[in-house]
Image (tube, rainbow, N blue to C red; front, side):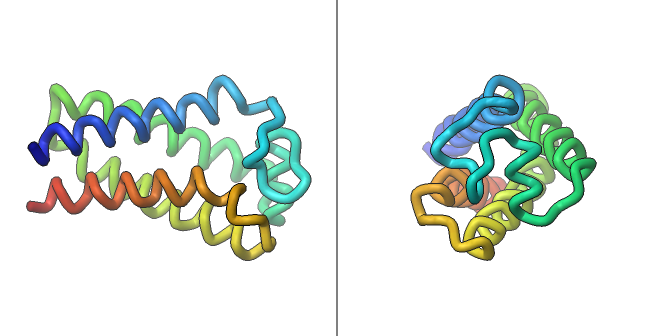
Length: 124
């Protein structure tokens, strides 16, 4: 049962992150921080340098792919989930720091909770 919950969570996290970072990177969404319309603008809202957007994107996409690969190679699940947990905690914190409405922080919070769930299950 816990393995099924972990696997389902891994897929939700991976699909969600890849959707945002590959398909919606330059598109406006109601969840962008501040008044940003693109991912680059969102990082500017957080007062982060443009290069950091690409580094974070690389980390999130790579960790997502490893979560998917974890179905076949379980040893990559825990480090990938921990990395995503840290990145989502940071994303959630940045939304709070710029005083975004809670609606804008919900995707980051949701992925934070799911990645935390995966971490806990993998540590059992």
